[in-house]
Image (tube, rainbow, N blue to C red; front, side):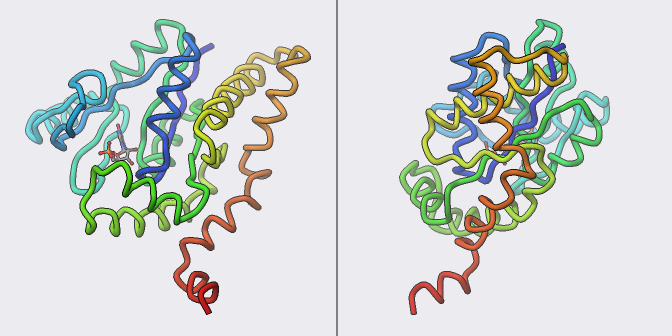
Length: 231
Ligand code: 5GP
């Protein structure tokens, strides 16, 4: 049975790239295109990256209960359409839902059979570098996103799996392995030899195993830790 996959990361964490790599690798995974009231960025395509809606239209959708979940993020409205999730599941594919960190636990409560995955940057410096080199945001926005990232990462224990994005290709493979491990777990099927190795990689990303890896990442976002390093 296909299942929903909640995917979150701080801005610049690599979630979109990793999700696209997985989609290119696996035909049994689809993507739920979210709705947003923020204006499109350069290169973004209506219906592919987002459905770009006016605030009025978005609110009408909320009233009509068209959204499986919706939230305000960075001053704009975002939401996952029920019809979009159902469309992908009905085609027999697992469905990736891009959900902000605040919205993820609420969504998990509403859709308990969803698996939730948090993608983390390796540390603060790498995240800052990624935000700067992608060249999408002003200095002020970068500062705000870094500050938000720290608060978001503090919520890591609400997720089923933690994926530290060191190398994009490896992260996409790990995401694929998590989907495989969940599929096997839910069907009760025994992993074959090669699948066993991939399930072990996925197990290492489970929250209980990954806690130790999150602590140094969180510490890199702590201004006191940075101060001590520099003295
Ligand atoms: P961006 O504007 O940078 O594409 O996304 C901003 C934030 O909105 C990200 O944290 C992203 O995960 C989140 N987001 C994107 N789509 C949705 C959605 O459908 N629902 C919720 N709750 N958050 C979303």
